[in-house]
Picture: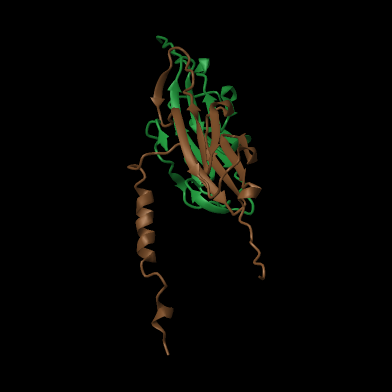
Length: 131
Length: 141
């Protein structure tokens, strides 16, 4: 057994109990700053694209993913290293983004969010008239 | 008469061991992370190996079997970043990985079926007919 990967921080449950009876994990996230704006990459294995919910409210971007992890039938667990569950993580944004223009792509259990910086968010100077 | 064994569980160290295991889990930051995380389910006739491989393309995964060992190997490629991009936060890891799982029986590559969906790899393995335990009849002699 060998792995050449660098250290991965372990996932920590955000909430101990849920109504669905599965744990809620904090997805591992990469944040990349591009010229057009920040890009967030979240790992949510077991979550189908239609089960992802992204909301933006008052500069808080929240990502929720509902895991679909059917257990094998007629088999008993022999060795378990992870516990399938749901995912949730919130990000506080430092500026305003247009929710309509946020692009979300889910592929192979990885959600990529592109947040293009709004052109109208550029600072507008207000001219002061002499009275 | 009061039997002292009814008051105490069969294993007097069960609680101690449970606490110790919980502490071990809590100190996961010191343990070397293993990728991918694998869950193995089995019975006498079949086994299921489920691995979390988010961000890995199915064609980058190699599954091989030899005797009773199943190996999952592959590579998780780092995303191509556009020019002028810079990392702000890095929690995910990339690179080559390999994991070997010993199964309770010898595996025939024809009896292995792998499916991949949403970053989860599910491998179903059936035990070959010839390898199953057979009952031997005793003849009267």
